[in-house]
Every structure is written in structure tokens, then in C-alpha cells.
Image (cartoon, rainbow, N blue to C red; front, side):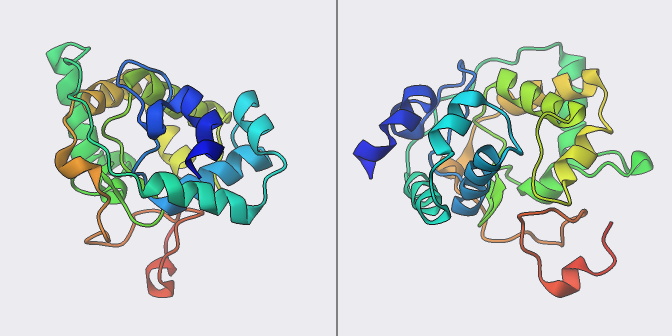
Length: 212
């Protein structure tokens, strides 16, 4: 598989390990279900980036699952994070939203879905650490403006639309400045049900009843 994914590593870095300074996200070690969902989203038009769409437009579901499994299985160290790129007050705001959300606005904390260590949850929820600040900013902005979509119901679009521009910047700045624990391995499961229904994330039937 390694020779066949060289087109991926031209942008995502050697073996899918992007650097914190780059725009492109790291894909090595991400949950296989998450990676497969994103490949489907690019191929099927829910995400819009011409080079990705062109690469994937003729590939089958089975082959995209194979690519996803290859990158998910890579176990590579993360580089240390860059120094915080925002004022202390903005960093503190980002930390508060990531860890606690805002119950008054029905805004869930990032840790409720992405795991307490923010390294993701198998098989389909990505970690948010080890990603460049510019990439985090751009993806939250894309959800806010409708340029990025996920399988319905699109829970991230719902969350992103509740955030102000300052809050997006604060969250991205705090996340980008955090070290990645334990090689960024995703958790096996969440300690509690997801606060929102999310397409592409399989939930037990009991967890889906009554969710909005």
C-alpha cells in the first residue's frame, strides 16, 4: 500500500505525518472510520477541495477503506507543539470552551465527543490535538459557512454555527498549543453518550433515542 498512497503524502507529509506549521492535517493514526468517512465526503462532494476530489472520484468504497486502514495503523511520534499563538485571555477562553462548553447556549464541550484526552474515539471520531491552528480555524469556518458537510445529521455544523469568530480563534489557538499524549491513540469508547446525534458515528439504539 505504501507506494500507492504517495499522492497522499505529497501534501500530508511523509507517511501521513503533517507538521504543526503546515496547513494540511496529520492523517497517520487517526481512527479508520473517521478517515474513511472523510474520503467518502471528498469523493461524494460533501467536502470541497479539488485536488482531493480529483484523486478520489473513481475509487471504490472498498479501496477507500483500505487506504483509511493503512493510515490508521501507522504509529508515529508527534512533534512538540508550537508556542501559544494568542494572548493569555484568548487561550483561557479556548480551554474553557474545549473542556466545558457553554451550557447556556447548549454548546457541548469538545471533550464530550472527541474524548477527555482529545485524541479521538475509535472508530470514527478524530483527535483534535497535533493539528495546525490554521487548519483548525479553516475547518470550523467551513462548517459555519456551509462549505464543509458531513453525513446527516451534521453535528459539527450545528456546533460551529454557535461559535463566534473570536471563539473559533480561541479554540484553535488552545488546541494547537497542546502536547499530544500517548502517541495520540484514540480512546476505545466515550464515558457517556454523545451530546448530539452525528452522522457517520454509529451509536447504540438506546443512545440515539431522544437526541436532537
